[in-house]
Image 1 (cartoon, helix red, strand yellow):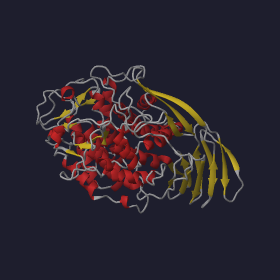
Image 2 (cartoon, rainbow, N blue to C red):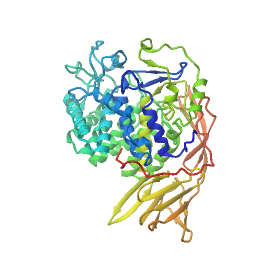
Image 3 (cartoon, rainbow, N blue to C red):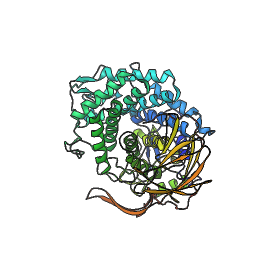
Image 4 (spheres, rainbow, N blue to C red):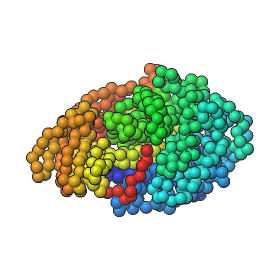
Length: 578
């Protein structure tokens, strides 16, 4: 594992930081290569329109969170010159109106012009209205939360104002009629240009709600609510009985579009304390789970056999929000999704990655634009610490979609932060501290240090730095734990609603022991014509082994004899990410 403990979230995020700044174009300061083709020899990185706004914004968002989380004293806690260059590139794309615009480059031409645009002429300036604005606004919000600097808030407000200014008004809310905005306005001004466009173009809503929560900027809430209300009434991807409408005709089954929208509806409902939004989101979250696995694999598109890390992150964030605000039993989802498919998707060994790539069948696909915007040097090496963006149930690669998307590297790092940030919850009531361990990872705060021994054994060591009441969530189905203090007799505790509770003194250390039930589960994804099946072997909430093993970069070959990961205090002050 190249010396990285597989359950050390802080060590993983350090690698993630290096990966996010590793694949930049030296001739275009701050611009990444968004795509990697693993089937060329050597692997090739290509520019595309998602370098802009979407990729750059997601990278800055993830880097902001990650540098807070790394261990105190880590050199990765400081912004690098590469990160500063990515931020400058992101800002360069912002027009005077506040929107993120695509540059006039061959590789940046709009995607989907046959279904998302009317009367498109090559060379026209365009602003991709959904993911580019979403990614950039996510970055601005996280930067503002982390630094308090007015620069980021000012640009975030200008983007919201611009998005409101170009939105079409309708009795049902707000909508963008095309996938790209062009100077002079929309060429088409009605809904339903494409069957899924209303939902697709509401992508920025999640970032808008987060901006409102961070700053109180009312137009951001108005934007999110307008887009969501319209999409809820007009999106065609949802059936009246609470299911996803399967892909047909021009209606796509892009899972990340669905999960990002559900996440947005959930967040809006929580901020507004509006139960109908929450109930709708909860219902479709539960339905979304049926397309994936209980260990956190979810498809890039409905009924596909390969996944997407962006979907994993959406599902983890929904589980955490539902757990925090609706029912704590959803923490079990977040734990299983995070400690399994998310962690297994990260490349912790460059040697294993290189060997896997050599096994993938080579193709002779020519580079786009005759290779003028491509790179071959050091591409594989740059992905050490990155994520297998399109993994399958037992392998980091699948020939259905062997290309890598850099958005998944950023999404993976964001999810690592989410797991670390919300593993512990510290609250005060009448001056008394309560610490709740929701996710059983090794984490440390100024108040408490938690060391997890899973999956080697069901054990958590807790050391307090001040008197507090401590609650610990046990694995799903486990109802009892044994507590071994260092200076008091051993005692048993019964779980209430999945948690045990104890009162600890200042500088007290206890070991909490509990069983890790073992089970075997069978999985099948894809379609009846093209299924993919595997069998999983569990210990508690950790998937230890999957059979059959993958062909290229096998997943879930986990050791049961690991020493616990050792946490440390973070380099920065944690901020809200959900």
